[in-house]
Structures are given as C-alpha cells and as structure tokens.
Image 1 (cartoon, rainbow, N blue to C red):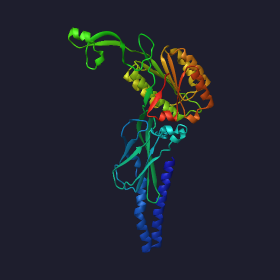
Image 2: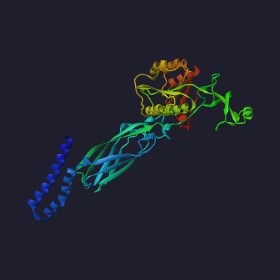
Image 3: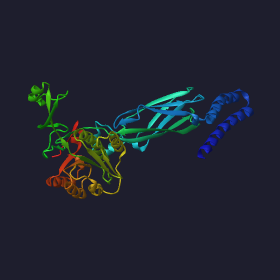
Image 4: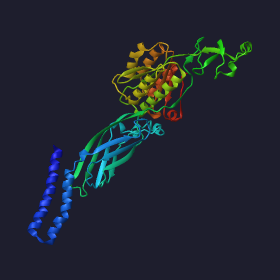
Amino acid sequence: MNGSIRFIGKLSFVVFMLLLLFSFAMFQGGFVSWFLFYGALPILLYHIGLLLYPIKKWRITRRLSRHVTRAGDNLQVNLRIKRTFPYPLYYCVCEEILPDTLQKTDNASERYRYLSQPEKMNAARRIKKIIFPGFRRIIEIPYDIEGIPRGEHKLYAIRVRTGDVFGMVTKEHVFQVEDQIAAFPNERSVSIAERFSSYDQGAASSSAMNLKNTNVATGIREYTPGDKFSWIDWKQTAKKNTVITKEFEQEKSTDTLVVLDASFHQDINELAFESGVELTMSLLESIQRQTSQASFLSIGRDTIHFPLNHDPAKKDWIRRHLTKVQPGGNIPFAVKLREEIMQITAGANMILITTRLDHEFSRTVRHLRQRTKKLVVIFIQAFSLISAEEQALIRQLRGEGSVVNVLSEDELSRKIIEVNIV
C-alpha cells in the first residue's frame, strides 16, 4: 500500500513538471521557453520510463564457491543479475541481507587472544556493492565473506536499489534468493598425556592405543607384510622353513564418553563455548583413533546422546550437531547431567567439557567418580575471568583426586592442546 502511494506521488510529480514546462512554453512563447521544454522533455520522459520499469522482473542468482566449509574460512560469492529489457540505468546498489548468525567473525589465529573480550568477535557486516549497469543485460557482482563463524547460515534475500541521477526517482525491490552455508568446527591437534586403555591381564595403563601387547605371545602364524622384525619366531622359522611370527594379545580398550556443557547461563563466555565445541570435535577424533569405542553426550536445550562405535554415519551426525549447537536451556548443566547418570555405563571413562564451575557441578563430579573408571574435567575460560569461587572449586576437586584441566589463552593458543588425564 505504501509502495503504491509513493509510486503515484512520484509519477504525479514528474507529470506535473512536464505539464508545468509545457504550459510555460505555451503561454510565454519564444525560443527560450520552448528550448527549456524540449531540453527537459527527454529527462522527464526517462523518469517516467524509470518509474514504469519493473525491476522486480529481474532474475538474480547467487553462486557460492562452496556450501560446506570450516569456521574461520573465507567464502567467495558471485551475484548474477539478468535483465530481459536493458533499460539504461545510471547506478544500481545491491545489498546482501545477512542473517544474524553472520554478524560475528572467526579468526582461528587470533580468536584466543580475545578470550577475555568475546564481544570483539562481533562484526556488523554490511555487504553493499554499487555498479553502473548502463545498457548491460547481464551483470555479475563478486564479493567475499571473510571469517565465517561456526554454524548454519541461511542467505535468503538481496536488496536492489536504483534511481536517476538527480534522486527524483528511486526504485527498490527485495529478491528472495535462498542459499545455505554450513561451517563445521575446526579440529585441533590434541595431545593426551595418558591413553584410556588397559590389558587383559590387568588394569595397568598403556602408553599407546591399538597396539599389541608384545609381552604376552598367544600363538604363531606366517609372516605378513608389516610385521616387525622383532616378532619373528626363529625356532619355528627354522623348523618350518618359512618365516613365522609371533601373535600377541590384543589390547582391550575402554569406552570413553565425552560430555559437552551446552547449557546457557547469564555470564556465559561465547568465545569459550566455541573453544569447547572445537575441543570436543578434536577429542572425539583423537579418542576414536586410540580406542575401540567412544560416545558423545551433549547437554543443553536438548539432551542428545551419540554412541559412536566407529559408525561413519553417526560421526557425521555428531559433526552436524556440533556445527549448529548453541547454548540453551534453563536447567543447570550439573542437574541435567545427574539425571543422565543412570544411563551411563558404569566403568567407562568420562571427559566433561564446561565453561562454568559451581558447587552443584562439584557435587555432581563426586557422584560421577563412583560410576566411572576415570573422570577428567576440562574447564575452558579466560584467565582473568576465572572467579575466586571457581579457583577454590578447582583446588577442592584436585584435592579430592579429580583431574581438572584449565585451558585459558596460553593453552588454547598452542599448536597442540595438551590434556592431562592423570
């Protein structure tokens, strides 16, 4: 309705100016008055044509360099405008209407410097390009989106604005052009000080995963490529006249559960939460390479459990969940975790990744230690934002025998993140 009123008003103004000049020439007469009329006539006719020109019939498409990327990467975008009738245009402003999810930036190399100032990662992105179409039928507009943050981002509209040289006539239309970008969390190199595994004959910790226990031979077999020279059984080799190697007892792995605190609280550090998501992804990949079974539990607005078990499809589900998970929910993390305790297999290893410590969390950790073989807490927070209460809880948990890793700017800025489990 408002658009129609503006259109009628602008058209009436242009027609009024045309009639005014014509009336002036008719009543005044003479060369000057008619010269003014004929000199302004092409301009006024152009304005009338511009008012009647339907820019909403343009066809606009958006081409992305890729739809799936990683957090912090750059994305190349190309807008293509196709016009059926090349009405001459002096200028055209194209604006990408960006969603709120892209009003942040992610720089993997500098992110952790601002762990104590997460608001510095906010970015008021505005992508506007001005072009001069002239008589061109096809117009291409390239631009880049830099530092894409983790998450699913939907590009849904492009605003086009054009007008005349004098600003008397302006036209605007919003084109619905939908595309989706998925930015997976980055994976970091993680160094685990002691691996979660044990041998059949006891509970002694092993220094490596998925390796053979070369102290206990259980049989012999013929040599196969890849067997070590030290595994050769020389007596059996001489007796059978072929190379024979020893078979050793396989290492038995222990289930590991990684739990991410995705609950919302008033003082949440969003940048620390992003680091927790990134570390969760990295730990799952690292543990999967080292143990036979690992699972993932996300507690936030919804409680979602992913048993991994080397299933590629479930690994993809976890990656998608970590791509779009955001802090949410009104129930504290410790309370929800306590509700999930009965569903957790007793004797499994557990890694808790959180950005907040309180007395309720401390009580939950004591309860979990009775049901788990090994419990590791990873607390992610800027060093200057760790409160005196949280420091006291860290000392208390460590004094009770719990393993607590505190990751702040220095630890997260390293190429390899070190996680201690002893």
